[in-house]
Image 1 (cartoon, rainbow, N blue to C red):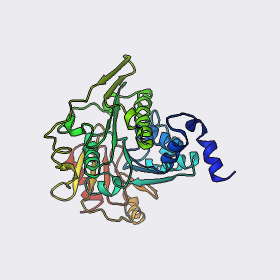
Image 2: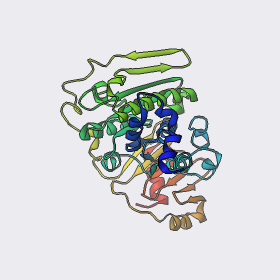
Image 3: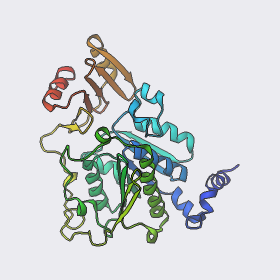
Image 4: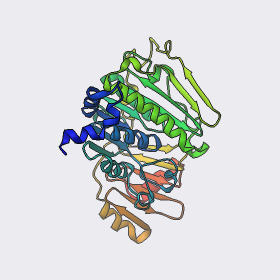
Length: 348
């Protein structure tokens, strides 16, 4: 079977759907998509994109697979958690077995103002698989600056929301939320829990909108914000026709506030709901994880793979160290204590 026949067979049922057809499938196979966040939403989004035949899929996530992920993050398994595999690596391995004909580009990295342009531009669509508004406002700035559509999605408990954003045509995220909510004021999966089905409803809605955008069916896009609650049987469309603001800092005034690096160099931030603090340097550099592991072995348990080093300080506190210098200090929510631990075991 030649490559054309294989493609026709693989995507035959999708091509039988008249709004896509053969021409739409050709467009999908030439499309480039970035997925920001490979947690629960990202897993479903990536699965849909790869199976639909999107030609290039970039996966971006800073985290690694843990046992608590497996209830809802459908691309991962127990071996991934046991081996501390970064999510994008574990996902890429699974996805390449699903569809070997497309290009999957995994990036184990914290998406922030220093790398957002490099990671998010040059694609036809950005899909939101993140779990925080800081990343979403970053995506929104990139979207407006480079005229790249993106699809916002979020889920917690039994509730979810999604909205399609077309630069210059629809309200952007900052039209609706001028600034992201203060830490501790927004529910998270770690504080309020989440059921798996709401993940699939939200991400599948995002994926359907993605197929419309990538095949050029813009007249069929849902221009509303959709709110779901599967437990209490709610499906609420919220009209967005009048939500676009003439004084919006992003889409009206082109003030891309979230693309400017934090003043003061290196940054530490508390990870909401995770009892963890993340350190990421303003100028990422290459760490020799093997040498660092040898230095730490005499003083604590060390787990090492090609993608990260996990150092157990004690039964509660751990350092998860990445090759680019980023470190997650687990079992600690106090930034001052986290800085002390970082300085003690990693150095200045």
